[in-house]
Amino acid sequence: MSTGQGGKYEDFELNRRRLFAVGGGFLAAACATDTSGPHAADDSGLRSAVRGRVLLPVDNGFDQARKPWNLTVDQSVRAVVELADADDASALIRYAQDAGRVLAVQPNGHNPSRAVDGTILVRTNRLNEVRIDPGTRSARVGAGVTWGQVQAAASPHGLTGVAGSSPAVGVTGYTLGGGLSWFARRFGWACDSATAFDIVDADGRTRRVTASSEPDLFWALRGGGGDYALVTALEFALYPVSGLYGGKMLWPVESAPQVMAAFREITAAAPDELTLWWSLLRMDGAPPMVGIDTTYLGDASAGRALLRSFDSIGGRIADTRRLMPTADLGDTVGEPTDPSPIRSHVELLNGLTDSDVETLLTKSMEPLGAIQIRHLGGALTRPSDSPPGGVAAPYYISLIGSQGTPDAAAANENRIQEYLAALARSRSRRTPLSLLSPVQTAIDALDPGILNRLRAIKSSWDPNGVFRSNFPVLDPVAGR
Ligand SMILES: Cc1cc2nc3c(=O)[nH]c(=O)nc-3n(C[C@H](O)[C@H](O)[C@H](O)COP(=O)(O)OP(=O)(O)OC[C@H]3O[C@@H](n4cnc5c(N)ncnc54)[C@H](O)[C@@H]3O)c2cc1C
Image (cartoon, rainbow, N blue to C red):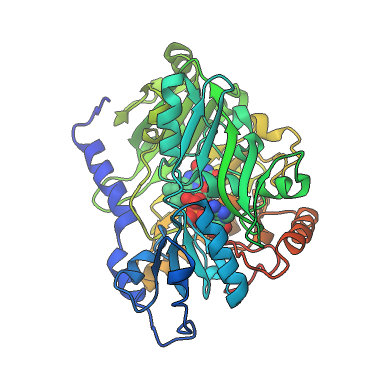
């Protein structure tokens, strides 16, 4: 890594972590549970119904156990169950059916919402099998496995999954939500690479769901969310890579126009193997910066050549680009892996006009910490039968702020709304399901026809509503 202007990159790293950590204390206090509240009805029968750990509001550790990764949501659940194994899932579902309870499966809470209030929260962390088959280029993983674990296991075989930016994100939740990968331009939605799901259905029966065994349910699980069954394991394709070149470049914010010009020029003609994200970054105690995060599926010299327009932009503060094993994919951006109070708004953009660029380059972003434009296109534009479908939008925008206090929340919200108003002409008003924020609903992610088909599948597979996802398809505004 070169840090042309000594020390600034280290400051950036420190402050990047601060951006996401600020406010944890405020939210921890806000998360104190009233055990005399509406969920105080007796769930002590859970302790004998399942073999995994059960935490009720009366138990020490309950408040910690019910916290999601994204600390902006105070989940008011009635119990937390850590499943011992897949059989335990059947036992829990039978309990829920008998007792009239609703289950919200949430491996770690990267994408929480108030829709889970009043439910039993189900943790799947102990379902941690990771099996890589280099011969068939496929993986089988338990429902508690993260992308970092898959990439680490696949990397020695020269293989990659269709992984996202954070190694801490769960493979199951990401895939059920579609999954927009660093490599989406090459391989499409992650859900399109899923080949089988092991589930426990609403009657507590285990099933292996494939395109031929249960075509409707298989279709819904490939990107239609977590509303239909409890997934205990899934299988998906891996892809051989001849090399992975990538990393982060940073400049002082004064270089933002040149960096944006190069970003637009390169993304207009990029091969599907190349992906770029442009970012404005603002963190307390560090100078504002503009950055490019990039991955290229190929060798370093070809990657460098494709990105050469950035080399003539002076004053570069950092350049971490290198040839890396696929296990190190998460280092590309270095997103936070510890729980954080994050407010983000993601939206597909139908274009990036001169007027949009002017907004991005001239508008004050405070108090937001990051604004990103991510390049889409490539394989995502091809027709896809799965719920997220093909994506014509060439970019998406991500507006991100840390929100530890009500004041910060209001200020973030105002700024986000200002950006959305200024970018109105290019907005799609559509957010990928996996990237919805807690204030959005499934309606913001899925076309009405797709949503209706998913609703019919939900009604057929879970008529009593035992499962509730973070973004329910039947009652999208529940808990909002
Ligand atoms: C730092 C960070 C980086 C991210 N990067 C990307 C990215 O690059 N691309 C992208 O597409 N998304 C990304 N996301 C979003 C992420 O994919 C979603 O938050 C996803 O839902 C995370 O899954 P999880 O299991 O980790 O989260 P959780 O919040 O634990 O689960 C999300 C939902 O998945 C469903 N679910 C999970 N497991 C099961 C199961 N076993 N059975 C039934 N339903 C289940 C449930 O409905 C649950 O509410 C990122 C999020 C964060 C916080």
